[in-house]
Image 1 (cartoon, rainbow, N blue to C red):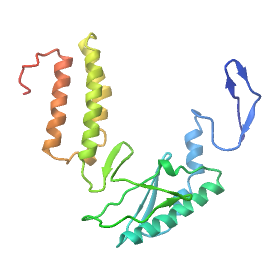
Image 2 (cartoon, helix red, strand yellow; image 1 turned 90 degrees about the horizontal axis):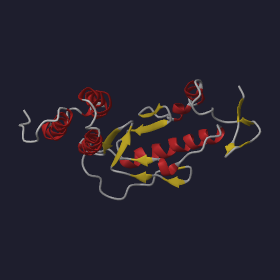
Image 3 (spheres, rainbow, N blue to C red; image 1 turned 45 degrees about the vertical axis):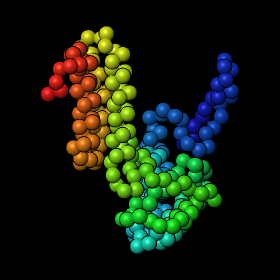
Image 4 (cartoon, rainbow, N blue to C red; image 1 turned 60 degrees about the vertical axis):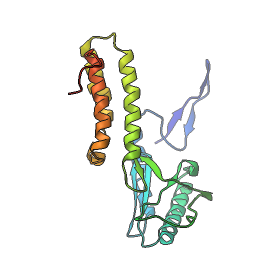
Length: 221
């Protein structure tokens, strides 16, 4: 299958040119063709206790081992295979967009061995976002809860600026835009504890005050 594209600068169009790699952005077949193209990438993880999982173009490599050195050795070996796969398939890796996180019982003492991708060092982090959920190296939900809270506050400020709209429109905005984003993936992080939920509950109460134009001195109950 051959795709053709036109480059446009201002009012000037180029001649049609072939697209050797990739698919036109926004095409109907694009997601399917991309999935077929990358279908064999997870085969780079060849260790039994290692998995390479993909969601669209978001790729996560997990490795389990008895020691940190053992885990990092396997990671570097698999990342070398990933770089080789990308080179053979005309893809470009982005080490700057890649992060490594060590999840371990207890505290690791000493410098972490380097993890490399395509000859560049991968940055070690203590928390990272995967598919919209913030994970940390202690498997705590403090970081994710703070991100949810900040997003909630920003959306409430937007809701407040829309206060001139009828009540039913504010309700629609809350249930269709705010509520789904706040409860996203709650089955995973919903056991974060009562303290975290109380902070979010206060923000839900604030949303009710804005939508129904209630006085701020009315009790939360």
